Image 1 (cartoon, helix red, strand yellow):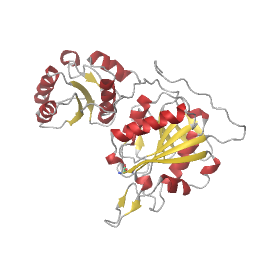
Image 2: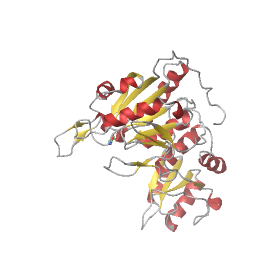
Image 3: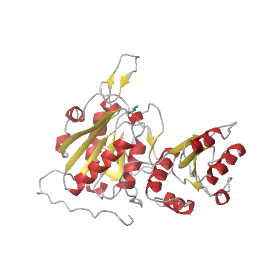
Image 4: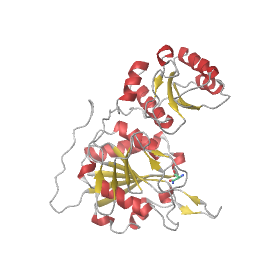
Length: 343
Ligand SMILES: NC(=O)C[C@H](N)C(=O)O
């Protein structure tokens, strides 16, 4: 951890006291209920966090749980206002020693984004775990209760300390930086294609297979706003329209979900050059789903003053750029270094 990381507060317990886990419920399919619009239809965010916990037998033997409802939304509606609310609540809970760990229930669609945002702004060594479900609570073999149980089990385990924000679903523990939703329906939807899983949780044990990764801590913008950063998805026949439009819209940054190693057409590259001249920061990432986007491979990043996203997918590159802009970083060299800081 770099400068600004809060000193971990020592928590003193009676020998027999269970760890205190604060559950922050935000919604998602884990809180979903069947809707008859189609045979597989459901509404996310229909069940409260309290009801969720009530459906997880044995969880009370793992931790002392306190539940708070932060929002109750499908995570396709996740937004930075909820991120700020979560970040402030977690900071307060740790600062006031209200909890030994946090579990956040969340939809899976944007879980990686919320996890990554929080990973960059929460410096405490106490565990922050996100979990969710792929099947609504009313489905046959709903996965929410088991995921909730495992998330609390990891949160209560001292080995989870100092590892930043983690995502726990379907027996796998993954880092906020590495994890991504990679299947529309499978229970094993989360993978860390570039960094690999951090560990596993099963009924018997919590097992980490990696060392804790370096993390940088960024300040939470005091005004609770993030700059406009747009993602432009590359494809065959790509023109510069969306890039020019983003500049006209007043975007401070553009993340390219590029082809292959973060490539764009020559026409789009000319648009990127115009965006740079207008002072817009441009990060090249990839639409491929796995692999690094490295500097100066097929695109001359030095010449155009571009940033290569390294292991970060476009949606995470966008968040990191927003946080860096909020922290006053505007030079491409500095931004590039910050993109590499978590590797
Ligand atoms: N499995 C899920 O949680 C998907 C849902 N759309 C959500 O992200 O809230």
